[in-house]
Image (cartoon, rainbow, N blue to C red; front, side, top):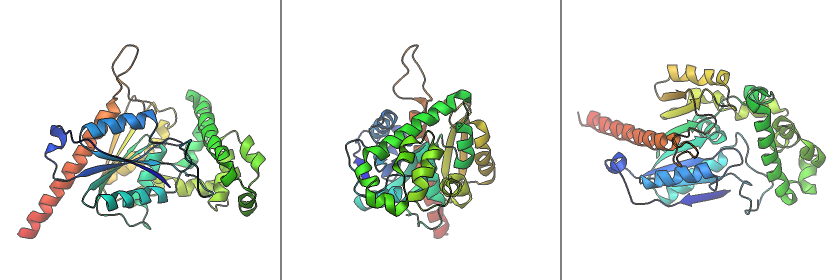
Length: 316
């Protein structure tokens, strides 16, 4: 597992000065993205500026210059690496309180992690935020296979990025031993034109699923929403070309029923866009960056308020 723990600046503004706890943000990037991705670097800089410590999960295999040491890379639904990063962060900073933040695929992983009953959540985790995820991999894939809003083009880019990661580490991932063990056909992996084809040729076999439908069902965070007990915030845009509006119905329903779930739906923003300002060049810090820092502050304040009320009730 590759983990980059980024230090934090001591500068703080009024948003965080009154918080009673050391707050760390555990960040899970989108598919094939890392701590080097521009939108991650921008958010980390803005969060550090406001006094937060940040830890970014580098998906296994995604960093170009870091070799894999085991015959696997990241997947849509495997939360083990994120769990390990959280435990490592808490081990380094035992008194810190954690807010888990996930972008796109990372939002799916954060949500799934918080809803997985088999993984015991550390009490230092005070909440989570998911941005621009699709909730249902089975239905989402169907939408990505059509050309409306250039979805098929986005699918092609994601497929090639993932395929490049596999081929970059082919000496480990596609060794003769591994191909025989998992019945992998290298030509099928190379010729895959869509994520479903690549997942059929590689991902489902590596993770031991009989079909990609089983893989996608296991991976989809929407199947774990009802189990989440921590406060969690979801952000989506109605004009997201990768996550069309019909995929937002599950989170709308859950947010209407569960008091610990807040759902923010924007008319505009695209997929991880939310740019603003400037006729030619947008402001480097986006609406999303500023809003996320404010939401993290709100989760910390909510935790403080909960602690105060608990202590007050115990003293009666």
